[in-house]
Image (tube, rainbow, N blue to C red; front, side):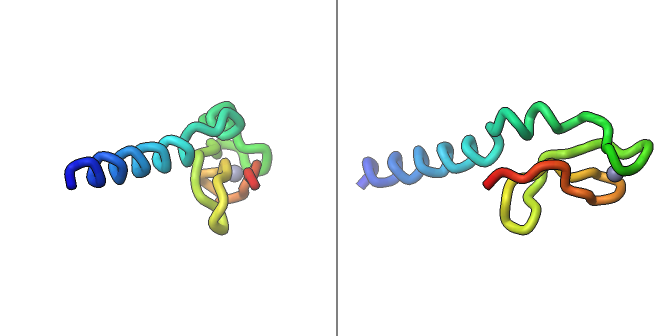
Length: 65
Ligand SMILES: [Zn+2]
């Protein structure tokens, strides 16, 4: 039984990793927004996809499909 539990944990870790390890989003996160002055881009989920979204105006700068 404990083997099944280990597999489930591994799958959760892989899923968490893949949703946060996009090099494009990591490069965009923290950069200045192109559409408003003091805005900063943050890695978020936009319409179900990973994206870099401005924390101030909410404009998505990039989406990963
Ligand atoms: Zn903005």
